[in-house]
Amino acid sequence: MNAERLSIWQAAYVIARRDFFAILLSKAFLFFLLGPLFFGGISVAAGALGAKAASSAEPPRLAVAMSEGNNAAFAETHEKLLRAVELPSIERVSSKEGRNPRALLADGTRNFGAVLTGTLASPELTGTPEQIGRWQGPVALVAAEAAGGKVPQLPAVSLVPTRSSSADTRSLRVGTATAGITLLFLLTMLLAGMVLSNLVEEKANKIIEILAAAIPMDAVFLGKLFAMLAISFVGIAVWGAVAAVVLALGAAALPPLPAPAVGWSLFIALFVVYFSLAYLLIGSVFLTVGSMAATVRDVQTLSMPATILQLAVFFLATFAMTDTGSAIEILACVFPLSSPYAMVARAAQEPQLWTHGLALVWQMAWVAIFVRTGARLFRRRVMKSGPAAVSRKKPKRSPA
Image (cartoon, rainbow, N blue to C red; front, top):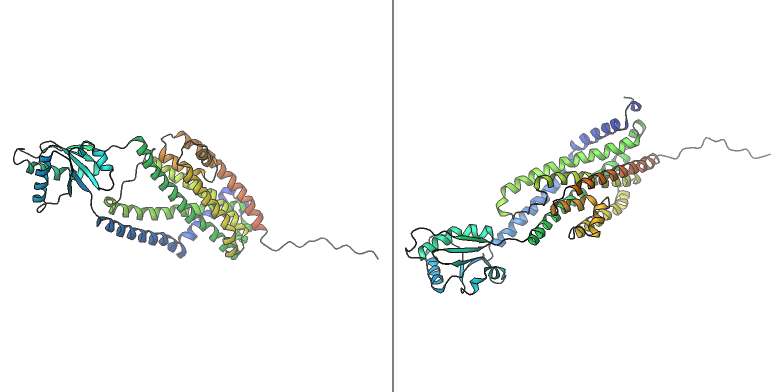
């Protein structure tokens, strides 16, 4: 095939296809995929042990805060029925304390999961939606039995869920933003290293010099960069499928993750796009660093500044997300390397979509700049990897 007839994008596609299948079918890539799965398995096992230890701790109790007579009748019936059915632990408190159920629930020293007020004929439960929904049936059963036949059927238990304020919702979304930034950082750090190892291996085997003789170096740079991005999506698909199975099997034991402000579907789509842009940005930096390295030892030395830069970007985005709209948060959104991280956090906390449109255009422009600059440096450094050219000038004769 005559390389001169290929455009730079066609040549880049040839390199990308070659690298993609060469890495995908290698044993090293298989072990690379298994590594995070082993780490995830250890994490799941540790979480299961922690959950078992937490389940063995003292369970939350039901605070019974009705009148004195109702409290006594409810406690006596509870003790009698406890031998036959599973009921929550209870603690009798005065009706005076029951006037402010939220204060009882906020008292961390007493471990109350819900507060029972009202009467046996019309009980009222106050607590989190999950807890009062779980205890609604047992409370109705005990109250009907404690009424001594005065209630013809199970009484309707009024549920008073403790509602979260807008400030609470915002604080919960910060957790989603933190999880998004952390996952983006871990995936980028884990997958960007493949660019360096693949390039150094080909430089050591002189394959890069063969490619340089047949295809423009800019095409080699682009092909390798997008091949590694495609390989990254393969890894993410495998790990995501395994994570989905684990979450489906243990969803009941996991706390619900607060929904992001833009919704889960759009948040996941934006996350994928921002990951692609973040990977192309840092991948072009790593490819440029790899072109300067001749050995694995050189890679470790030269890649250290890039790794430190990634850590600095991660900490900047994590710090900035706590104050949306501030100067530091805007700086994190504008700075090219931290922009994908900051915008993922913003998607979790703010519902506006026009900011993401601007950010995507801005990041794509910087991807083009990074790729173009990296390709030029890549071409210069790789083409200098061979021996120096011998001068063909004739030596000057010294005068007789």
